[in-house]
Length: 256
Length: 249
Image 1 (cartoon, rainbow over the protein chains, first blue to last red):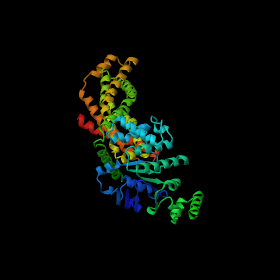
Image 2 (tube, rainbow over the protein chains, first blue to last red):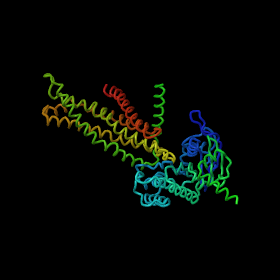
Image 3 (cartoon, chains in turn orange, yellow):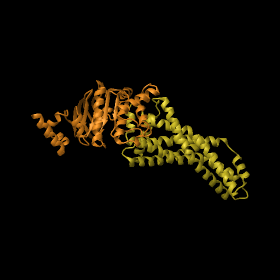
């Protein structure tokens, strides 16, 4: 479980996060949603330590990151997997090389064991036969799956995903969502997904945190979101006709 | 304002270098990457070094022969002057200015692209010192291979002079070779090698610095690459003056 308590972050005198508090549960898909520029990426980057908030606490199972020294942070990072928006695969490595990379750097496994583990991870994300291809030779959806395989290679306790569906077609987005959800439950990981995608929100959002203008405005799950009276959240999630109709349908069926 | 900016940049460069020169997470990976960088930055530069050295060696020989026309100057002077120019300046300073363009832009654009595509963030999040992991093998690899390139450059330039002597007859070959051997000072070779080591460090570290701190997209990577070449060229020229004063006086 990751707890965030009253964190604030500013850039050039402009406050981006205003005392945000949130809890991200183990074994659940935790979603951070909000409009562009609302501060959700800053929140995720603060959580993983790429940015340092001016105040507040970030507790990884009770361990305060803000009070850790450099070596402790380095050790903690070995428990973290991250899926970047653009996949961030290493261009110079093959698909298999990308997944083997963290294992080579942080384990004492033999080359054969490393290869076996990497191939297992690739099979887990339903990616076979692409081992020797380079990232530029595979599709965006496949790149995302390789990135997930790399992120889970070291059996992380915490998995961060920055807009995992951006640039993907709806069908592939759903597959990636299902994969993330399955992996979260299967390995009991604390998964935090930063997303704009409403299909993800309504499909896999077990714990949803809505950030608006740097404030945490709403917390709930994918069922509670249909009932929300929060104006900003309604504007954001149910902005188009389709989602308004979906909500009307779901709400009417719940009342029956 | 310019002074403040320069000092700030220099401070960031020093912090970056301190991050680069830390103990690698895995020595095995470090040696593997260093070997790879020697091949990529060093061995792959040999064709360029050969072509440039061959032609510049030939051109220097022609120019020396055409300009030293006094009956008071011995005919072997062409070879001697050509040798001194190649040993003292061309095989180190000018070669490094050329390599700043090839190797420097390669490093800046490679690391810059890794920055904008979040590959460096991925390394950081894994708990890897990205500056050390990416940059140290480049600095060490190029530093190790630089003397080889300098020696290559010296001999290929001489070969250029020899070939022009043979094929144009502008100077008798025996006179040219005699000139190359006359009053030879071994220290000039060491002087060139020492200078080239400093320059190779500038080329790799400055280019890596500009690439590492790129913000934005493809346009900024291009700008960083240009800035890296300009900055390292200026630094090479400045250091050339300082090292010449220190090593030759």
